[in-house]
Image 1 (cartoon, rainbow, N blue to C red):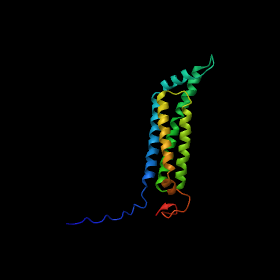
Image 2 (tube, rainbow, N blue to C red):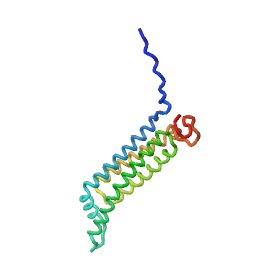
Image 3 (cartoon, rainbow, N blue to C red):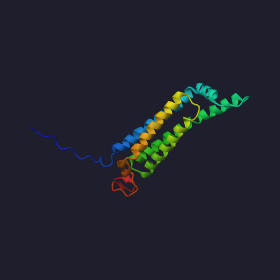
Image 4 (cartoon, one colour):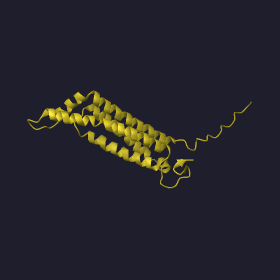
Amino acid sequence: MTTPDAPAADPDAATATPPQVRRMIVLMFANLALSALLAGLMLVFQEQLLDYQLAHLDLPAGADLAAARETLRSSAWSRVLPVAVVALAYLVVIRGLRLGRRKAYRQVIFISVIVLVGSGLTLLQPFPWWVRAINVAKALVVVALLLLASRPQVRDRFAATRRPDLVDGFPS
């Protein structure tokens, strides 16, 4: 009877992305996907969204509805550009997370808090149920991301002390 050879030590195992960090990255992509979905739906259903918002605005009698509609239209377009900017920022942050950079970890916390506040603020504005539902889903994803980022294993990986697994800020 032959015994299989012992598995060789994986040289990339020391520099591999830990499971907790991979989960953080998955949650970041989930948040990004929800943001892209929301931006896409807002563009596709822009007229219905504008009608809903106009119907729920507290406008004074005799207000110029056309001007109010154009103001709302421009704000709808301003929601799409941040999704593209956040997508690029996420790619940079994800690369930093994989390299074990503390700066990327801090950026995840900062971005998550901003997204959480932004999602909460949209619940106070006149939006249809589907916009609110996607924002609640985004908030839940970000809360999960913050909870995962606060775990001791993750905090230890990105601790401010000099870490032996990194040489000059790069995995050895």
